[in-house]
Image (cartoon, rainbow, N blue to C red; front, side, top):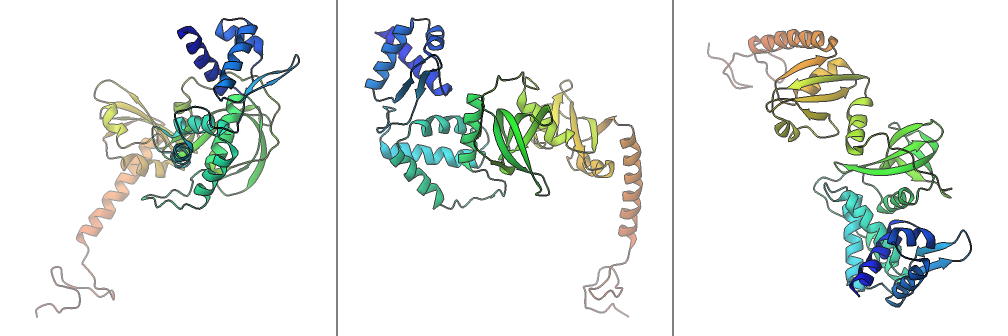
Length: 346
């Protein structure tokens, strides 16, 4: 009985992880015969899980939405509360649980009966969150779950994408993974028109179905996709790029420098390397200086000359400001130490 129960849970997990499985593929993954798979599917149906089957050589098993909520130890109200909570967490990219929320939401919405889906949709449509730090780039959770399902099922995505100036373009991509960072979502996908990997901000994506066909997933552009996206949005996207050595430990620098501002790596116990980008070298000087750490420039050498120029200009400006006479609101000179509008002693 224990082996059967464990196998049923494994079967359910496989059905949730992929849109459709052939009987032979499930039998191979579970280490049983196709006949045992058919019996296990019947057991899941008896428990209330809506498993659909299509006959023929191209057929298979698929977990669908049912008339009754499967036994997830949740009643209707609890299921609605969980779905709304997951939508909120996913839509605002809450750090640490955003990506997990999308995966959980995709699984839950897959089996929610229509009556509960309508309740969840109504609650989200007519609820206005009062956030301490509202984000204009908040993402529609429905778009996130749609993208997550396309990544899971390896289906091509047709989309309209707006650049930073709002100009739209049509793209056809092979979606690979969603990456969440600092309340902003990114889609890593293979762009068919450009024959290269691209990173898309999800808040700028408008899906344009129908989607498909399916594709064979490619080798991803990096093993660590979070670091790959961080390099893209903080470094590769800018005209000027730099590598500097911060004279503080990695953990201390990471408290101030977010993944969207630069990529950090340890350089011994008391220093770390920062790779970052900016619109120009002049802006780069301000960008690195405002981080508040002592640093050394590793590259490019032109940044050192830009720092010297900025240092000389700042020194002259501060010296002039320190020796200038205070002025009143109307521009008239006044003696240091007197209040605006009062007369100096004769």
